[in-house]
Amino acid sequence: MHATRVLACLAATVALFTSCGGGSSTSGGSPPPAASRYATTGASPVNVYIATGPGALSRAAAAAKPLVYVPNTLSNSVTVIDPVTHTVVRTFATGKLPQHVVPSYDMRRLWVTNDMDDSLTSIDPATGADGERVRVSDPYNLYFTPDGKLAIVIAEAQHRFDLRDAATMKLVRSVHVDCDGLDHVDFTADDKYAIATCEFSGELVKLDLAARKTVGYLRLQTPAMPQDIRLSPDGRAMYVADMMADGAHVIDPVAFTEVGFIKMGKGTHGIVVGRGGQPFYFSNRGWNTLNGGRRGPGSITVLDPISQKVLATWPIPGGGSPDMGGLSADGKELWVSGRYDSEVYAIDATNGTLIARIGVGVEPHGLCVWPQPGRFSLGHTGNMR
Image 1 (cartoon, helix red, strand yellow):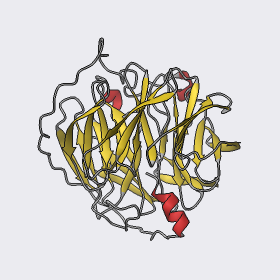
Image 2 (image 1 turned 30 degrees about the horizontal axis):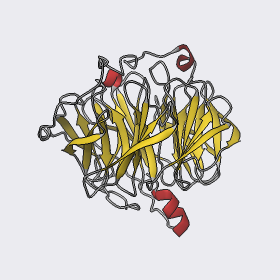
Image 3 (image 1 turned 90 degrees about the vertical axis):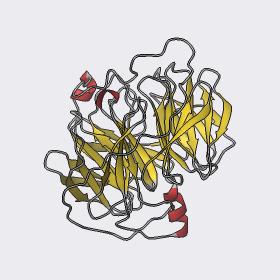
C-alpha cells in the first residue's frame, strides 16, 4: 500500500523493533460463507500456475544467485539477505522511497521501484549487484502484460497506468483512472484484462489490454481498503486482500462482480501464491491504519484458493507486521517483510514455525525472493506464470 508517501510527507518516523522469535501456534479456520460458482466465458484453464511448481526454474532464473531483496522504504535502500544462512550480506542505496523489487518479464533483471525519485534501479540477478537507474514517472509498482511487450508502471500519485516498452521503458501510452490509490494488479486467465485495486477509494478498476483503456469500476463492500490481488488457480476468481475489512473479497473477474468475502486476520494486506498454485498465503499486518506500531497482532492466513477454506492461521510470535512476501524456489520457506518492525520473517511454509527474524532498514515493503519458478514474470514481487 501507499502509506509511505503519506508518512514521508508528514515526516513521520517508524519505531524500530528487535526481538528473537520462537515457534508458531497453528489453528484451523472455519470455512468461509458459501459463494456462488463463478461464471466464465470459454474453457477455463486447469491451472494458471501449472508452470510454477517447486524448483521449476527457467534457464534465466536458474542463472540467478539465490537472494532475498528487501526495499527499505524510509531508509532509501535495499537489504540483501542470504536465504540459506538467513544473514544480511549487503545493503545498497536506491532512489527515494523504494517500494517493491520486481522481476522483469524475461527474468533477466530485477527492478527497484523508487516511488518519489521517479526512477527504477536495476539489479543483476546473476550477481545481486545494483546497476543503472532508469527514469520513469511515479513508479509505485510495476507489472508486465502477459505477452511481455509492455511494462505497466503504477503511477499512483498521477492516477495513471503508464504503459511502457518492456525492453526500453519508453512511454507508449498513459491511461488515466478515476479512482484513488491505484495499487496492485493481476491479470485474467484469458490474458485480456488487468484488474487493479484502488485502496483509497475502496474499488477496483478493469483495464482492457488490447484497447488500452479502462472498461469498468467495481465498488467493494465497505469498509474497504483493497491491497494485493491474485487470480485463483482455475482462473474463475480473484482474491483481493483488504486491510480495513480484515479479509479477502472474492471477485468474479469475467462478470466483474463481488461474489463473496472470506474473514481473515487484522489488516489483511499481501498475497503469496504457493508452489503450483496451492495454497495461498495472506499476510495480516496487524493494523488497519496507514502507520502502525511495533509488535502488532500480525499473522499469516493459509487459504485453499479452490475450496475457499481457511486452512490455518499463524500468528507472528511476539507480534509483528507482516506485509509483502514470497516463497523460496522449493516452496519450503515463506519470506515476509515486517513493515513496522524493521525486520523480515522467514517462516516454515508447511507449519508456520518462525525460522528467523532478520533486522533490516526502516519500513521494509515489497521484498523479492529470487529466483522463482515459472515461464515468465508478470511483475510485482514475483507474480509468476
